[in-house]
Length: 120
Image 1: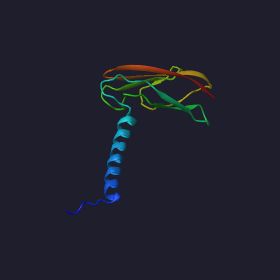
Image 2: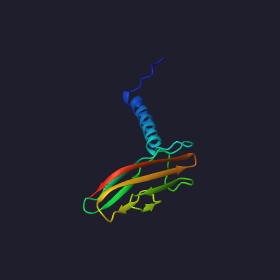
Image 3: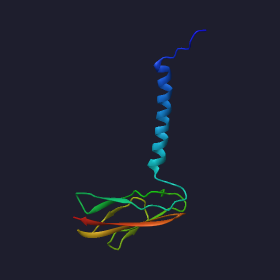
Image 4: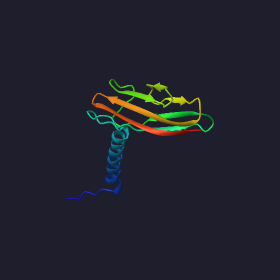
């Protein structure tokens, strides 16, 4: 009886393919930041355009999906203006200190977070 001989490539390539598939799946699951049945965890970024008083707000909340039934975002920009867009662009009339607030809601609950901004 002749022993089976396998090359390193014939064993390594399928294993590497399986590892790559698992990695892609894991990244997709964790990157989305959603866990059905859990209340949202509010987070956002605010990036001011250096040429004007406009700020791009980016909703980075966990367990929250834009345009999903029962998922809502409510922004208050600290200057009596508000928005329900996911990632709104807001231009302030005057330079100054503002407290921006985001409230996110999903079917399992809601969360709120805020940031103090120096707009100049």
